Image (cartoon, rainbow, N blue to C red; front, side, top):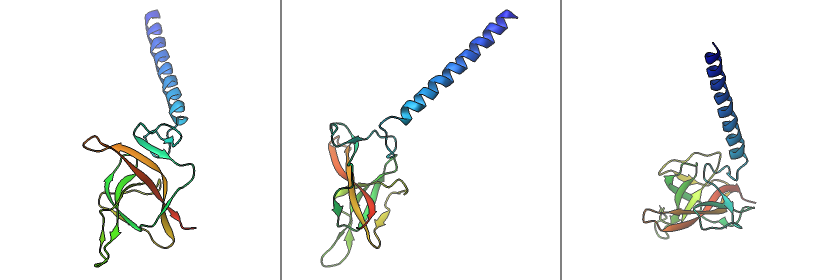
Length: 151
């Protein structure tokens, strides 16, 4: 009988310790420098830019004049890499071969080949930069943009 009691007490102690460790890990992750950007650790521009991932401005930066983008790759964190649409002078056709940007909006979901067009008084503003390696392992840096009301 005593052996069963010791065994059950050992199991109960193991369960309590496991729950306590998971609780501590959860609290630590919640207070870590992770941002709403998902599971990529973010830094500010004052930090080193040697690593990959996003670096956010303290305030929104430059306002861009383009009005549409076409998503070509959706990232796990909810953002999407996209090409800027450029209007052809003679035909008026929009070609999505311009600058590459990372669009991020925590309230939006993106999909491949989606065209995001601005309406009304909306503008794209830069909120940071994103560094990532391409297939050839070249490090690319692109602006992170989000949609804002034009002021």
